[in-house]
Image (cartoon, rainbow, N blue to C red; front, side, top):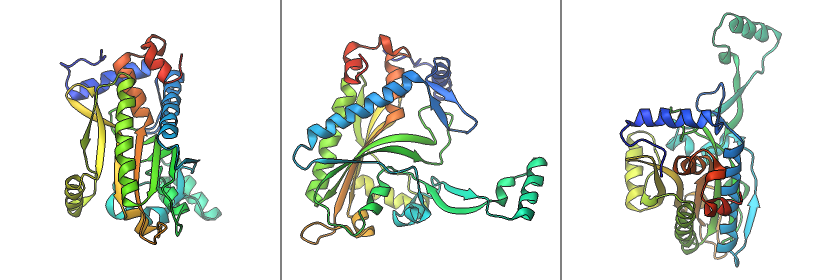
Length: 313
């Protein structure tokens, strides 16, 4: 039974949900817009979802095997260029600046700070950027290599500059991703298998979900054509649930990249063909909050089967 009131408008539903999450220490406010901490119950649920995802990976890939890797949430700005993120999603990216001046420049910075001015203008690009998708550093790591259909498990932080009053939409968030690089058939099989398995898991957790075709938020007029082409080719599916009645929210996605990353990072299969790739990802905080909306803020009172699935009983 969802805790949301279907008679409230969307903004009121979001405010009500956020107030409940904060009052029950699920969300911990910070000084950054869209940057939220998690309390003990929420973090336990997030870890349970990640563990359940890893169990699925082990079950789905007994023959080709999996490799669990970890990359930091910061990479070089070149990664944004190589993945085409600068061209396609400039509205979402975030870069890092640092102070590199001398004593004179520091005095200018302090004066601006003390006057309440924009002291950040005295910083310079550091050559680093926040990672927008957990899988992107993987392709740089594998650059120039021959891939064989291995599945890579990745869990980490992402950053996308889309601040929102919706507690389901964080600026920085964690994702679990299962990525496969190999032949076109291997990539497509991975996307389809994980889409089904991910949907099954979310339903086992008591969520009402549906998978539907989707598109990434490509920027500008050219982006509209890319979005339409992505939908027409059914390259992206999202798993949706209604945290707010009548307003579906994506909590997981399954993506077929075709040879985009294989071409960009010169990856190939044993026969010399450009590698294809696919990924499936759970938005870990989004799934956790969807569960709170469905089952309430007291995890101890959740259905026993859900707690067991998450390793909480």
